[in-house]
Image 1 (cartoon, rainbow, N blue to C red):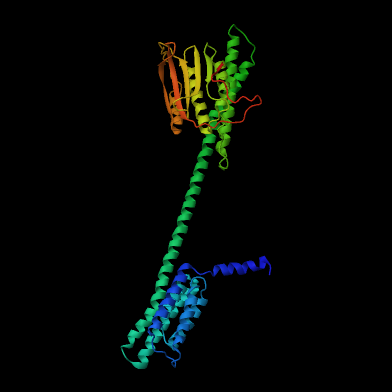
Image 2: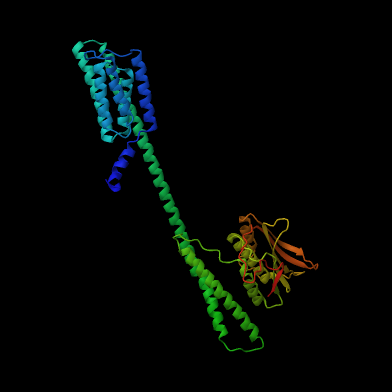
Length: 436
C-alpha cells in the first residue's frame, strides 16, 4: 500500500485516539467495578446464575467503549446498550450501570444532532413503557420507584447532555456573531478611512495643487517677457525663485495625492527627506533670501552615521520649518544650523537653528500670513511624538547679539553604517560647515 493510499487510514486512526478524560473515565469505572466485584456487591441476575466472573465481561466492554465515547458515536452507544443488557442478565454491577449512563450522556453531547434527538426520545419512551408495563402487570404503587430509577438512568443523563450541548451551540453561535460584527466594523472603518483619504486627495488637488499650478504658469509667463528697467534682474531672479519653489511644491503635492489615493495600504509611504538633504535645503534658502542673509550648516556627527528613519524625518522637518521662519522674520545676517550629540547623552541628537533678531521690530500693520504660528506648534508636536523636547524663543548669541533660537533634542540611538569608503576613512571630520 502506498503512502497516499494509507493516508486516509492514518487520519482515521488519529481521529480515534482516546481523549485523556475518556481514559480517566474508563480506568475509574474498571477500578470501581473490580472493587465492587471483590466484595461481592452485585445484584441478582435475571438469567440462570453462572460463574461470578461473567459479570466482569460487560464491565470490560463498557470500559473499552468509554475510550471512544467522543469519537466513536453511534457505535459506542450500540455496544453500550448490548453490554448493559448482558449485565442485567448475568448480575449487574453498579459501576457498569454508571458507565452506561455516561455512554448515553456522551451520545447526546458528542453525537450527531439526529443521534442526539433519537437518544433523548428513546430514553423517554423506554422509561414510560417500563413504568406503565410494571404498573399494569403488578398493579403496585411501589413500582413507581422502579420507574423513577429508570428515569434516573435514562432521562437524567440524556437531558443533561442536551442542556450542555445547547449551551455550547449557543456560545459558538455568539462567538461567530461577534467575529462577524468585528469583521463588519473593520470593513466599515477601512471604508471610512479610504473615503476620507479620497476626499483629502480631491481637496488637495482642487485647491492647493491648482493654486501652485497657477503660480508656476504665471511666473513662467512673466519670465518670458523682455527685460526692462534697472530692477529687471532682481525681478527675474525673484520670479525664478517663485517658479522653482512652486514647481517643487507641486511635485510634492502630487506625490501626497498619489499616496492618499493609494487606499490599498499594502505599502506605507517612505520617509524620503533626511539630514543628507540639508545642504540642498540651505542652498535653496540662500537663493530665496537675496538680502544679505546667509545659511551655515555645522554638522558635528560621525561620518557614516545613520539614524532611525522617524528621527531623520523629524530632524529634517524641524530644520526646514526653522529655516522657513528665518526667511520670513530674521534680520540680515548669518543663520546657523548645528547638528551634534551631547557628550552627557550620546544617544540623543541635538538640533540648534540660530537666526539674527531685530533689536526693535517694526509693526507695519500688515496682516499676518494665514497659518502664522502653526509652524512652531507642528514642530513641537513632531518632536514630542518621539519623546523629545523643543524650545524656541529669543536668546543671546556668542557675540552678545540678540538671536532667535530653535533648539530640539531627539532620542537617536546610533545606527552607524560600518561600511568604509574606498579611501578607508572611517569617520568624518569633527566639524563640517557649509556656507550658502
